[in-house]
Length: 186
Image (cartoon, rainbow, N blue to C red):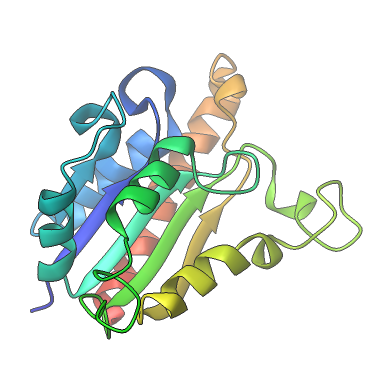
């Protein structure tokens, strides 16, 4: 059985998330054997235990990054984690082969609906275009890009509208189920 590492990059999952919290909770019900890392609770000061994080990555076969899409990319906490942990000599470079061949999958949400992410749409580009840095990140680290699971229209701002909230809760649960199926297929 593959060892699965799921890293949550939300900057405040406990107090300021709704969709990612539901996704991770449901995913934990479906895949309790996975290792879950919650960067916001483990490293609220953005000071990472680099050796610990690198060992987690070394031992994983499948690496999943779960995050809300903030300003067209990963949240600041996850970005800093990437900068500090994925260093030359570990993840890339002539001697940085620790992640070669590992499967890499991203899972993310946006407040804006999916239809806004298309050529000519309000966001101007399809969501795939915003993922080029993550695809290149995987390539530079020798990981196998396994694609992504994405759900839009999960706006924290709509949490006070009961009907929208229920729809978003169901959508977040379906997201987790789609993600679990993708992970199981790897």
